[in-house]
Image (tube, rainbow, N blue to C red; front, side, top):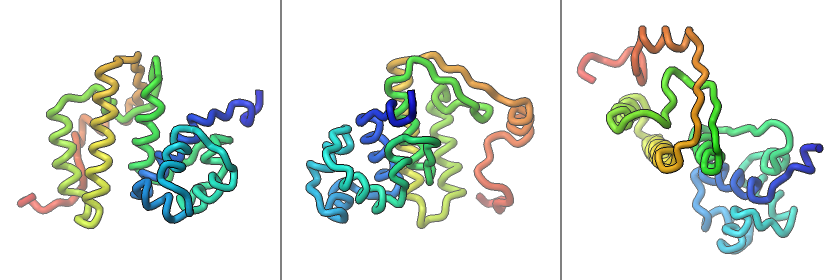
Length: 181
């Protein structure tokens, strides 16, 4: 079976949505930019693709290749928000998740970890990017909530170097902060 035989329209729509979210565009704005209705964009994000020209226009506006939206070859994700949204989508239906994670898989962390992560973002992310940082945190939290409801099998592969670094440095947002932070 070739890559083209495995193309799923639902997956195309999910990738489209992840890239739209990653670019910080609302559905109304993207629809306006490419000259389609918001309803048509919502249908495309559900996998109801009717015209390849529309998909090509969307890919150009999102600055992502058409093969990437189609899922042909390696899926390239250009930013953290799009990546975590795409992870959330993939995990939604997963029966098991096998991944190479940092020392802690976020999906099994506590609410206290979320609070610390929020503090780390607040101290290390520039003010101009705080809205994007909050969207990332919201997406991560949604991933965790859905994982907790479904509890698919989770296998984390962690290198000894990662464990040693975590034990040495702990959870650190940015090096070199002044003591008053």
